[in-house]
Length: 99
Image 1: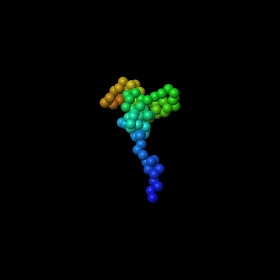
Image 2: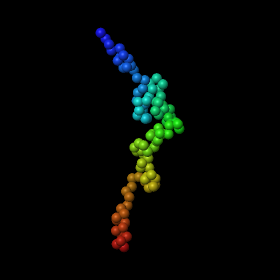
Image 3: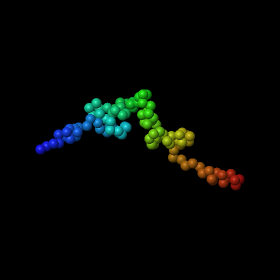
């Protein structure tokens, strides 16, 4: 006797999978609509609504690693110099004291 009927129904195919190109990294990409419910992928603009202030707060700049932005202010301050070594402040102080 096979009594697996309702259990088999629960195993039916899912309509959601991981967001394409992992833009938001959530399992909210609808396979038939081909849009992500969380971030709106593949739309160029990210999904964001004013009626959900908390959701905006969770996703906004500063909640992640900020790999690029966290070093930007320091690089701006130094005029985007690259490939040079800063002059030693100890050596400059020593030469000023000796003269």
